Length: 193
Image 1 (cartoon, rainbow, N blue to C red):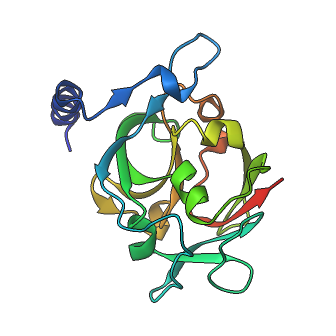
Image 2 (tube, helix red, strand yellow; image 1 turned 135 degrees about the vertical axis):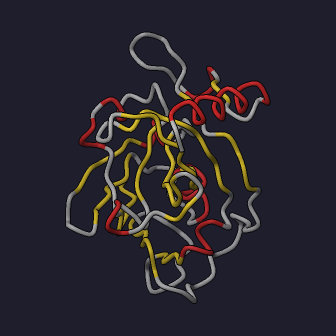
C-alpha cells in the first residue's frame, strides 16, 4: 500500500471512529494516552470455558498461572481459534521498519482472559521461535494497548516475515518505546505471578 493511500486509509478510519485513542488505556511519561486498537472482528469464543484443543498447526502456547488448560497444563492455539477471540486493528509506527504499518490481532488482555490468567499475575514472559525473550507487565497488558498480531496489512504474517504471531504495541505504550520489546515469531507465553 502506498504511503499516500495508507494515510488516506488512516484518516478515513479516524473519521469513522474506528481508531480509538482514549485516556482509559494508560499513558506514557508525557501524559499521552496509549492507543487502544479498534475492534474489527467480534469474538465468537467465550472466555468462560476452556479454549478448544487445536485442530490445526499450533501457533502459540500459553503456560504458567492459568486455570483453563486445553492440552496438559498449557493452552495451545491454532490460528483459527486464536482469531476467534476477536480481532483488533491499528496503524502504528513499526520501530524496525521505521514506517507506519497496519496490524490486526488479539489483545493480550483478551488472550489472557481466555485462558483464565491468575488475578495475581504480575507479568508475562514471551519466547520467540529463536529463543529471544522479553517480559511485559500485567499493568501494560490490562491497558488494552498491546496485541498479539496475526495479520499485517490484512494478510497473515509469514514466519520469515516475523509471524505467525508477533507483539505490537499501540502508540504511547511505555514498553513499545523500546524496539527490543517488539518480539516477533512468538512461540510461547508464560504467565507469571
